[in-house]
Structure formats: structure tokens, C-alpha cells
Image (cartoon, rainbow, N blue to C red; front, side):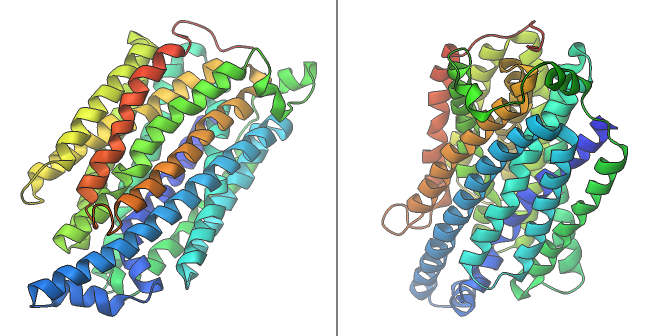
Length: 426
């Protein structure tokens, strides 16, 4: 029951993370009040007028997408810190109830937003719950299952989240098939549907057992204090965990998450954006599972280095491809999704191994979600690079620049401890 509830939580977590990038372009055009200019950019017969309109629309959409993404990442970071600490104080399951309820409610309310600032605020609030659910679910499952199952569990954690990304295309296509395009307000209905995962809280509250390891740990030691993860014995691990998570998250949120917007813009087709999202998430499901399994078999450090190298090369190829956005392009998107998301199988395997039980949710929650603050800088940088002063709305050039961050990961990982073959610290 603990695993089933956590997998559902991660799946809905991924669904609610991925749903906004898929509808962000029509949503932002709507709330920014630039629908007429967007129509001109799509239909004008004068090439110069059309090109100038496209640049203006893309610059405003890109700028606000960067701000909203940064707000989301900051919210996820604060949520991971708070709910991780709460999970060490009151229990994994009880804290998960509040985290799921938070992200479901506020994502659903995004459908009522009337301005970009409201969208940013609601995404920030919804992210509080998403950041918390990750750290709590990882701690609960890793503590309930035997050690030899951890690589497979870590892979399932990442795969479940990315299955949620695949499912994001379903409500979009269903609502458009009903005759309500995203650009005509359909995006509001898509976001409104996101309140449904709140029903998961009833399953959590009624059927999921608390972690026995946590119960033993809190019964024999003082309750967790947040500052303990910066004690002399844990400080180095906490900081390195945050940097390693941040590098992976910058690549994802600073560039890969923008691929549906890029495809939507270049093709003028919401459907092609949907396909790009599905392809990226399908690759991610496979990649996250393999990232955990390979990390277990080969070693934590060498696996992270290889994932960074592969992500760097495949992203460089994607963002420098020229030609039509056809099935060849989508096949490369599958590979991009696989490599860049493989870290989200590796991180649930590695981060729990850095902290003792009574501080595990706090420590891994801080490490992973501090990475989101670092990634918020990447999202803002993407928005800046998209401005008319730099790359003038070119998603490809901006994305190619952001993904150079994987070079840093190839160096930093060698300063982290190798934990292969070790039991979870008690």
C-alpha cells in the first residue's frame, strides 16, 4: 500500500508539473491580452509584419514562462524543505496527505487565473506540495522495502512521475476533440481537471501504514531539527546533494521543459506540441528506470558522469537540428527525454543513502529541492536568452546554451561520496 500510494502520488506529481508547459503558450497569450497580436503572427500575409509579430509574442511569452517556471521551482524548493521537515516530525504519511492536497488544489485554481501574476502565484503555491511529495514518498518507500529492492524502487519512482507527463496530453486532446481549442479557453478546463488527485488523500489517510523505521527512530532519539543537516558530519553531503540535483534540474526546467512550447511555436500546431510532450515523457519513463538500475550496477559516480555526458551530447544535437519538425525530430526528443530524466531515477537511489533515518526526509528534501532554486536561475536565464536583446525568441539557441550546465555535473560528481553496496544509514 505504501508503494502504491507513493507511485500514484508521483504520477500525479508529474502530471501536474507537466500540464502547465503543455498549455502555457495559449494560457499566457490569453492572460497577457495579446490574442490579436498572436493571431496576426499566425495569419498575416505580409512576411515582415508576421515576423515582427512572432518575435513580440515569443518574447513576452518566453519572459513570463521563465518567471512562472522560476516561481514554480522556488515553491517546490520551499515545499520540499517544509514538508520534508514535517515528515520527520509528524510522520511520512500524515505529511503526504497535506502535500498532495496542496498541489492538487492550487493547480486546479490556475484555471481561474486572470493575469500572469496570478498564474505565477498559484504555480508557486501548487509547487509547495509537489516538492514535499517527492521527498516524503522517497523516504516512505525506501524505509518500508528491503535494501535489495532499492534500485528497482528508485527506477519506479522516476518512471511513475514521467508516466504522469505522458498523461498530460490526454485531457488536452480530449478537450480539443470536444471542440474547445486551448486558445479559446480550453486551457482553463485542462488545469481545472488537476484538482482530481486530491482524492488520493483519502487513500493515504485510510490505508497506508507509517514507516516502521521512522517510528523506531523517533522513539529512540530527539525529533528532527532542520539545522542538523548542516552539522559537521552531514554538511558536505547536503551541499553536494543540492548541487547534483540542481544540475539535473537546470537541464530539465531550463531547456527540456520548453520543447513543447518550441514545437508549438514552430509548427503552429497544439497537436505537435502534444506529441513532443508524449515523446519526451516516454523516453523519460525508460531513462529514469535505467538511471537507477545502472547506478546500482556500475556505481553512483560513474553513472552520474555518463548521464551528464549523454545529456550534453543529445541536447546539443537536438537544439542544432535543422529542417522540419517530423517524426525524426520526435525520435530525437525521445532520446533527450531519456537521458535528461535518467537523473530522476538516480537521485532517489543516491540521496537517501546520504542521510540517517531520523533526518532522511529533511536531508534529501533539502538537497533535491535546493536544486530547484538553482534551477530557477536556469529558468530565468532561459527567459532572458529568449528576449529580443539576446536570441530574439529562438528556443533552439537558448536551449543549447542552458544545457552546457551538464559540463559542471561531469566535474562535481567526483567530489561526492561513492555509496554503492552500502546499507541505508540508520
